[in-house]
Image (tube, rainbow, N blue to C red; front, top):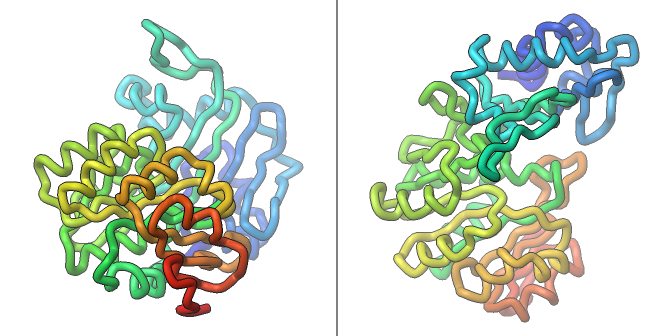
Length: 318
Protein backbone atom coordinates (compact mmCIF):
# COMPACT_ATOMS: atom_id res chain seq x y z
CA UNK A 1 0.00 0.00 0.00
CA UNK A 2 1.29 3.45 -0.92
CA UNK A 3 1.97 5.99 1.84
CA UNK A 4 -0.88 8.24 0.71
CA UNK A 5 -3.32 5.30 0.76
CA UNK A 6 -2.26 4.46 4.32
CA UNK A 7 -3.00 8.05 5.33
CA UNK A 8 -6.50 7.89 3.85
CA UNK A 9 -7.07 4.48 5.46
CA UNK A 10 -6.16 6.03 8.82
CA UNK A 11 -8.36 9.07 8.12
CA UNK A 12 -11.33 6.73 7.55
CA UNK A 13 -10.93 5.53 11.15
CA UNK A 14 -11.73 9.07 12.32
CA UNK A 15 -15.25 9.47 10.83
CA UNK A 16 -15.97 12.99 12.15
CA UNK A 17 -12.71 14.26 10.63
CA UNK A 18 -12.39 12.21 7.44
CA UNK A 19 -13.72 14.97 5.19
CA UNK A 20 -11.25 17.54 6.52
CA UNK A 21 -8.34 15.08 6.33
CA UNK A 22 -9.08 14.25 2.71
CA UNK A 23 -8.57 17.94 1.92
CA UNK A 24 -4.99 18.14 3.17
CA UNK A 25 -2.37 18.72 0.46
CA UNK A 26 -1.21 15.63 -1.39
CA UNK A 27 2.42 16.09 -0.28
CA UNK A 28 1.26 16.13 3.36
CA UNK A 29 -0.74 12.91 2.94
CA UNK A 30 2.30 11.21 1.38
CA UNK A 31 4.63 11.98 4.30
CA UNK A 32 2.21 12.03 7.27
CA UNK A 33 3.09 9.90 10.27
CA UNK A 34 0.56 11.13 12.88
CA UNK A 35 -2.89 12.68 13.08
CA UNK A 36 -3.44 14.59 16.33
CA UNK A 37 -6.84 15.52 17.74
CA UNK A 38 -7.19 17.75 20.81
CA UNK A 39 -10.47 18.96 22.26
CA UNK A 40 -11.17 22.58 21.35
CA UNK A 41 -8.18 22.82 18.99
CA UNK A 42 -7.58 22.29 15.27
CA UNK A 43 -6.73 18.91 13.77
CA UNK A 44 -2.97 18.58 13.15
CA UNK A 45 -1.18 16.28 10.70
CA UNK A 46 2.45 15.63 11.60
CA UNK A 47 5.25 14.51 9.31
CA UNK A 48 9.05 14.56 9.67
CA UNK A 49 9.16 17.59 7.38
CA UNK A 50 6.17 19.68 8.41
CA UNK A 51 3.19 20.22 10.69
CA UNK A 52 -0.04 20.85 8.79
CA UNK A 53 -2.88 22.50 10.75
CA UNK A 54 -6.47 22.04 9.59
CA UNK A 55 -7.56 25.41 10.94
CA UNK A 56 -11.16 25.06 9.73
CA UNK A 57 -11.78 21.85 11.69
CA UNK A 58 -11.87 22.18 15.47
CA UNK A 59 -12.16 18.94 17.46
CA UNK A 60 -15.10 18.77 19.87
CA UNK A 61 -15.37 16.42 22.84
CA UNK A 62 -18.24 14.57 21.16
CA UNK A 63 -16.08 14.05 18.05
CA UNK A 64 -13.40 12.34 20.13
CA UNK A 65 -15.99 10.14 21.87
CA UNK A 66 -17.30 9.12 18.46
CA UNK A 67 -13.77 8.15 17.33
CA UNK A 68 -13.20 6.04 20.44
CA UNK A 69 -16.46 4.16 19.86
CA UNK A 70 -15.45 3.55 16.25
CA UNK A 71 -12.04 2.20 17.33
CA UNK A 72 -13.80 -0.29 19.64
CA UNK A 73 -16.41 -1.38 17.07
CA UNK A 74 -18.95 0.34 19.34
CA UNK A 75 -18.23 -2.03 22.23
CA UNK A 76 -16.19 -0.19 24.86
CA UNK A 77 -16.32 -3.22 27.13
CA UNK A 78 -14.48 -5.39 24.57
CA UNK A 79 -11.59 -2.89 24.52
CA UNK A 80 -11.48 -2.29 28.27
CA UNK A 81 -7.85 -3.32 28.68
CA UNK A 82 -6.65 -1.26 25.70
CA UNK A 83 -8.50 1.79 26.99
CA UNK A 84 -6.88 1.35 30.41
CA UNK A 85 -3.47 1.15 28.72
CA UNK A 86 -4.26 4.31 26.76
CA UNK A 87 -3.72 2.80 23.31
CA UNK A 88 -5.42 0.53 20.82
CA UNK A 89 -4.16 -1.17 17.65
CA UNK A 90 -6.45 -0.78 14.66
CA UNK A 91 -6.97 -2.61 11.40
CA UNK A 92 -4.04 -2.02 9.07
CA UNK A 93 -1.59 -1.62 11.95
CA UNK A 94 -2.44 1.97 12.82
CA UNK A 95 -2.28 2.77 16.54
CA UNK A 96 -4.30 5.27 18.54
CA UNK A 97 -2.99 6.67 21.82
CA UNK A 98 -5.19 8.63 24.24
CA UNK A 99 -4.86 11.27 26.93
CA UNK A 100 -7.56 12.01 29.46
CA UNK A 101 -8.53 11.44 33.09
CA UNK A 102 -7.38 8.21 34.75
CA UNK A 103 -9.94 6.12 36.65
CA UNK A 104 -8.19 4.32 39.51
CA UNK A 105 -9.17 1.20 41.43
CA UNK A 106 -6.91 -0.62 43.87
CA UNK A 107 -3.96 1.53 42.87
CA UNK A 108 -4.29 0.62 39.17
CA UNK A 109 -5.72 2.45 36.18
CA UNK A 110 -8.91 0.68 35.11
CA UNK A 111 -9.86 2.99 32.25
CA UNK A 112 -9.47 6.54 30.94
CA UNK A 113 -12.48 8.86 30.85
CA UNK A 114 -13.04 12.34 29.44
CA UNK A 115 -10.55 11.65 26.66
CA UNK A 116 -9.14 15.01 25.62
CA UNK A 117 -6.71 14.03 22.86
CA UNK A 118 -6.04 11.25 20.37
CA UNK A 119 -2.76 10.60 18.60
CA UNK A 120 -3.33 8.30 15.63
CA UNK A 121 0.02 6.94 14.45
CA UNK A 122 -0.12 5.95 10.81
CA UNK A 123 1.32 2.52 10.11
CA UNK A 124 4.17 2.40 7.63
CA UNK A 125 6.30 -0.39 6.25
CA UNK A 126 9.54 0.49 4.50
CA UNK A 127 10.90 -2.80 3.31
CA UNK A 128 14.63 -2.90 2.75
CA UNK A 129 15.71 -0.08 5.07
CA UNK A 130 17.32 -2.56 7.50
CA UNK A 131 19.35 -4.47 4.90
CA UNK A 132 22.55 -2.49 5.42
CA UNK A 133 22.34 -2.69 9.20
CA UNK A 134 21.67 -6.43 9.10
CA UNK A 135 24.64 -7.07 6.82
CA UNK A 136 26.93 -5.39 9.38
CA UNK A 137 25.51 -7.07 12.49
CA UNK A 138 23.71 -10.41 12.17
CA UNK A 139 26.34 -11.85 9.87
CA UNK A 140 29.14 -11.02 12.32
CA UNK A 141 30.20 -14.11 14.28
CA UNK A 142 30.52 -12.20 17.56
CA UNK A 143 27.00 -10.69 17.68
CA UNK A 144 25.38 -11.12 21.10
CA UNK A 145 22.82 -8.38 20.84
CA UNK A 146 22.06 -5.17 18.96
CA UNK A 147 20.32 -2.11 20.34
CA UNK A 148 18.89 0.59 18.06
CA UNK A 149 19.11 4.05 19.60
CA UNK A 150 17.49 7.24 18.42
CA UNK A 151 15.32 10.23 19.35
CA UNK A 152 11.52 10.17 18.92
CA UNK A 153 10.37 9.83 15.29
CA UNK A 154 13.77 8.54 14.12
CA UNK A 155 12.12 5.36 12.70
CA UNK A 156 13.43 2.97 15.36
CA UNK A 157 10.29 0.82 15.26
CA UNK A 158 10.15 0.93 11.46
CA UNK A 159 13.77 -0.20 11.29
CA UNK A 160 13.16 -2.90 13.92
CA UNK A 161 10.14 -4.19 12.00
CA UNK A 162 12.08 -4.55 8.74
CA UNK A 163 15.01 -6.12 10.60
CA UNK A 164 12.55 -8.68 12.02
CA UNK A 165 11.18 -9.44 8.56
CA UNK A 166 14.65 -10.05 7.14
CA UNK A 167 15.87 -12.00 10.16
CA UNK A 168 12.93 -14.40 10.30
CA UNK A 169 13.66 -15.53 6.75
CA UNK A 170 16.40 -17.78 8.16
CA UNK A 171 16.14 -17.77 11.98
CA UNK A 172 13.49 -18.46 14.63
CA UNK A 173 12.45 -15.09 15.97
CA UNK A 174 10.02 -13.98 18.66
CA UNK A 175 8.65 -10.46 18.97
CA UNK A 176 7.55 -9.25 22.41
CA UNK A 177 5.14 -6.64 21.07
CA UNK A 178 3.98 -4.91 24.25
CA UNK A 179 2.87 -1.78 22.41
CA UNK A 180 1.49 -3.61 19.38
CA UNK A 181 3.61 -1.54 16.98
CA UNK A 182 6.00 -4.06 15.42
CA UNK A 183 3.62 -6.76 14.18
CA UNK A 184 0.41 -4.74 14.79
CA UNK A 185 -1.71 -7.82 15.50
CA UNK A 186 -5.40 -7.22 14.81
CA UNK A 187 -7.80 -10.05 15.77
CA UNK A 188 -4.88 -12.48 15.85
CA UNK A 189 -3.42 -11.56 12.46
CA UNK A 190 -0.21 -9.47 12.11
CA UNK A 191 -0.99 -6.46 9.94
CA UNK A 192 2.69 -5.91 9.16
CA UNK A 193 5.04 -8.26 7.31
CA UNK A 194 7.27 -9.81 9.98
CA UNK A 195 8.48 -12.74 7.90
CA UNK A 196 7.78 -16.45 7.78
CA UNK A 197 9.45 -17.71 10.96
CA UNK A 198 8.33 -15.23 13.60
CA UNK A 199 6.12 -15.70 16.67
CA UNK A 200 4.43 -12.72 18.33
CA UNK A 201 3.54 -12.28 21.99
CA UNK A 202 1.13 -9.42 21.48
CA UNK A 203 0.47 -6.89 24.27
CA UNK A 204 2.39 -8.98 26.81
CA UNK A 205 4.33 -7.01 29.42
CA UNK A 206 7.92 -7.35 28.25
CA UNK A 207 9.28 -9.14 31.32
CA UNK A 208 6.52 -11.77 31.22
CA UNK A 209 6.68 -12.13 27.44
CA UNK A 210 10.45 -12.59 27.44
CA UNK A 211 10.35 -15.48 29.92
CA UNK A 212 7.41 -17.15 28.14
CA UNK A 213 9.22 -16.92 24.83
CA UNK A 214 12.33 -18.61 26.21
CA UNK A 215 10.36 -21.38 27.95
CA UNK A 216 7.81 -22.12 25.24
CA UNK A 217 8.93 -20.96 21.80
CA UNK A 218 12.68 -21.76 21.54
CA UNK A 219 13.67 -18.55 19.77
CA UNK A 220 17.12 -17.87 18.38
CA UNK A 221 16.40 -14.13 18.50
CA UNK A 222 14.13 -12.05 20.71
CA UNK A 223 12.99 -8.63 19.48
CA UNK A 224 11.70 -5.87 21.79
CA UNK A 225 10.92 -2.21 21.24
CA UNK A 226 11.59 0.54 23.81
CA UNK A 227 13.38 -1.51 26.47
CA UNK A 228 13.40 -0.33 30.06
CA UNK A 229 13.12 -2.02 33.46
CA UNK A 230 13.04 -5.54 31.97
CA UNK A 231 16.79 -5.52 31.19
CA UNK A 232 17.40 -8.25 33.80
CA UNK A 233 15.12 -10.69 31.96
CA UNK A 234 16.76 -9.78 28.66
CA UNK A 235 20.25 -10.35 30.06
CA UNK A 236 19.09 -13.75 31.33
CA UNK A 237 18.00 -14.64 27.77
CA UNK A 238 21.46 -13.78 26.47
CA UNK A 239 22.95 -16.18 29.02
CA UNK A 240 20.72 -18.92 27.59
CA UNK A 241 22.01 -18.52 24.06
CA UNK A 242 19.29 -16.20 22.74
CA UNK A 243 20.40 -13.13 20.77
CA UNK A 244 18.65 -9.81 21.30
CA UNK A 245 17.52 -7.15 18.83
CA UNK A 246 16.25 -4.14 20.79
CA UNK A 247 15.52 -0.43 20.66
CA UNK A 248 15.65 2.40 23.19
CA UNK A 249 14.97 6.14 23.24
CA UNK A 250 18.34 7.93 23.27
CA UNK A 251 19.22 10.95 21.18
CA UNK A 252 22.99 10.44 21.37
CA UNK A 253 25.59 7.99 22.60
CA UNK A 254 26.19 10.28 25.56
CA UNK A 255 22.53 9.85 26.51
CA UNK A 256 22.85 6.09 25.96
CA UNK A 257 25.72 5.97 28.46
CA UNK A 258 23.36 7.49 31.06
CA UNK A 259 20.39 5.25 30.24
CA UNK A 260 20.06 2.56 32.93
CA UNK A 261 18.72 -0.19 30.66
CA UNK A 262 21.36 0.41 27.97
CA UNK A 263 24.15 0.60 30.56
CA UNK A 264 23.11 -2.64 32.25
CA UNK A 265 22.60 -4.59 29.04
CA UNK A 266 26.08 -3.63 27.84
CA UNK A 267 27.70 -4.17 31.23
CA UNK A 268 26.14 -7.65 31.52
CA UNK A 269 27.32 -8.55 28.02
CA UNK A 270 23.81 -8.98 26.60
CA UNK A 271 24.37 -6.32 23.92
CA UNK A 272 27.60 -5.67 22.08
CA UNK A 273 26.47 -3.66 19.04
CA UNK A 274 24.89 -0.18 19.17
CA UNK A 275 23.37 1.63 16.20
CA UNK A 276 22.37 5.29 16.40
CA UNK A 277 19.63 6.51 14.06
CA UNK A 278 19.77 10.13 13.03
CA UNK A 279 16.10 10.84 12.34
CA UNK A 280 15.15 13.71 10.06
CA UNK A 281 14.13 13.47 6.41
CA UNK A 282 16.15 10.35 5.53
CA UNK A 283 14.15 7.47 6.97
CA UNK A 284 16.30 4.95 8.79
CA UNK A 285 19.47 7.02 8.39
CA UNK A 286 22.21 5.41 10.52
CA UNK A 287 24.64 7.97 11.92
CA UNK A 288 26.78 5.45 13.80
CA UNK A 289 27.33 1.75 14.39
CA UNK A 290 29.73 0.53 17.06
CA UNK A 291 30.90 -2.72 18.59
CA UNK A 292 31.23 -2.12 22.32
CA UNK A 293 32.96 -4.20 24.97
CA UNK A 294 31.64 -2.41 28.04
CA UNK A 295 30.04 0.78 29.24
CA UNK A 296 33.40 2.55 29.31
CA UNK A 297 33.55 2.00 25.54
CA UNK A 298 30.18 3.56 24.75
CA UNK A 299 30.89 7.02 26.16
CA UNK A 300 33.59 7.56 23.53
CA UNK A 301 31.26 6.82 20.63
CA UNK A 302 29.06 9.16 18.70
CA UNK A 303 31.46 12.00 17.96
CA UNK A 304 31.39 11.67 14.17
CA UNK A 305 28.99 10.79 11.38
CA UNK A 306 30.84 7.67 10.30
CA UNK A 307 30.13 4.04 11.10
CA UNK A 308 32.72 2.59 13.46
CA UNK A 309 33.36 -0.61 15.34
CA UNK A 310 34.00 0.34 18.96
CA UNK A 311 36.81 -2.09 19.69
CA UNK A 312 39.14 -1.00 16.92
CA UNK A 313 37.48 2.26 15.81
CA UNK A 314 37.97 1.08 12.21
CA UNK A 315 35.84 2.77 9.60
CA UNK A 316 33.48 0.19 8.09
CA UNK A 317 31.08 2.25 6.00
CA UNK A 318 29.29 5.51 5.48
